[in-house]
Length: 111
Image (tube, rainbow, N blue to C red; front, top):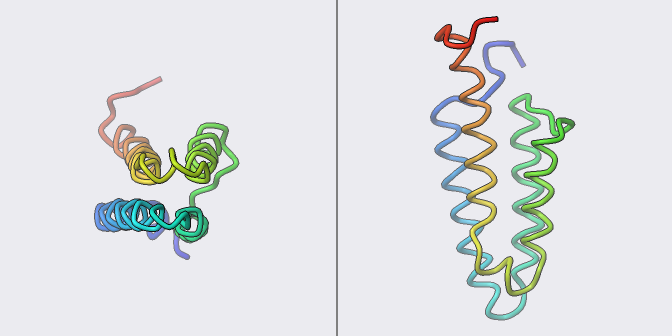
């Protein structure tokens, strides 16, 4: 993948957040028959692959803790079905990467 295609653009961020909302709604619906954990596994694999394709690594402590923490919370039977943790985690990770790309371009943080 070329260097200019790496990272997240606005369209990708919007699609990721919408997909996270879909997975949270699906998990809530499947939670009624105690199958919400299944949606959580598919969501984790989907977002992990999506971020890796876009060139984002999860070997940084903050990213690993946010993504891993949301995955663990989603696997808890009742709590994971109610809380929209995928939406919160993906929104945080996507916007965090976007802010780190925009702030140096604006020249706000100079050494």
